[in-house]
Amino acid sequence: MTYSQKSAWTGFWMVVPYLLFFAAFSLIPILFGLRISFYQWALIGERKFVGLQNYLDLFSDAEFLTNTWHTVIFVLVSVPLMTAAGLLLALLANGLVRGRTLFRAAVFLPMLLSVSVISSIWVIFLQPYTGLMSQVLGALGASREVYWLSDPLLAWVSIVMSTLWWTAGFVFILYLAGLQDIPQTHYEAARIEGAGRWDSFRLITWPSLSRVTVLVVVLQTISSFKIFGQSKLITGGGPAGSTKTIVFSIYEKGFQHFELGYASAISFILLLIILLISLLQFRLLREN
Image (cartoon, rainbow, N blue to C red):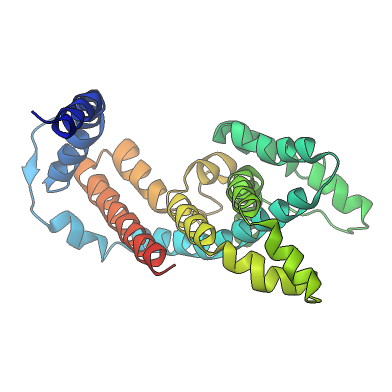
């Protein structure tokens, strides 16, 4: 056996423990869920094979289609906001001379909190009359109380704000790493040629961050499609179901109505969406 073959086998046996855990806790449950999606099953009792009927029923399920639309709107609104906020914060941190470490910690700190903690904080912030937002609006001269969680539009604004505050730190770290990889000689050459800050950003910074931007957009899109905790804990899916999402449908069908086959079908539709986005990511990365 040659040295390269020995190295290959050594690497293989080092990966085997991970593969076993992956198969036991990820691959096998996924395959089991796929099988369940072809059945009508209520967890207890016998399973009834229905083939593709669960998937076909999705296209006539008005509640699922509405929840899917809610999710798509959230993705279209939140992803650009999170990307822009993360980039802006990274530019600010990269330009700081003093207090850079404190600024980084302050921006990234919310990422260390769980969704339940984040949701609880924002529910307190958004309480009418006594909440922080009401106090701020009152100090600014607002003449009437704003009920953030009782209006469908404002409820979504609340969810977007809490998600932005929670996850902007992740985007911030990725962009900050990308900024620090750009050689300073590029900016020095641009200044010699008379380029201003906007020209330097447009011609050097933004093109250099193209791969990071693709990564950020795809990761945030995938994450936003899986939104559930904020919707469940901040608004409870209300008012009148206006903030329910795809994962909310999975939760209700699977854990409240015990329609496990139908819930599994929704899960694999979501998985298909995520896979398509991932394939798009690989294609864009190759082009850049």
